[in-house]
Length: 153
Image (cartoon, rainbow, N blue to C red; front, side, top):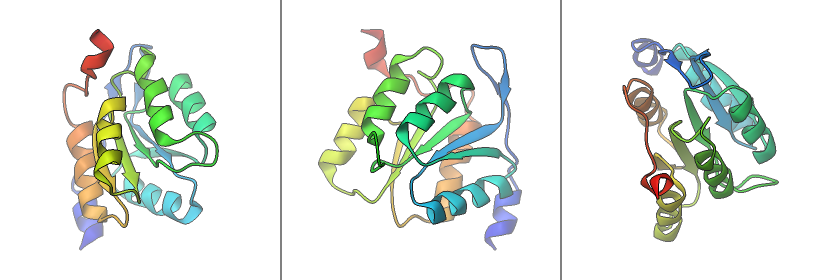
């Protein structure tokens, strides 16, 4: 049963450069139903979540309080997910926050573009909730966050 599996691994907390503790996941998805669905799974797993539907809101939220992890759609009404990811990777406050890109785009060139801009993991819609939560747990329980090598150049 999905609920049982989700409750087995509660969220953890990570200290960010600002010194604040965060146990939240930032969900960036413009479809309200999908946003709500992802949020429900995240909360069942013991995490807090913040939900936004626009790129400018995502950047503002992430910079104000860096989340433990970001679930990011590509196709948003203002900025696309690639641009959001690029901006987050350039800022020291969010450069190492894991970003799971969850999108309907399943072309190889989109995956390559995601890797180039610093996406931690790329998943496609429709998504398997168990697989999404496994990825969230994998990246949030990791003692080290993703580091984009292009930031060191």
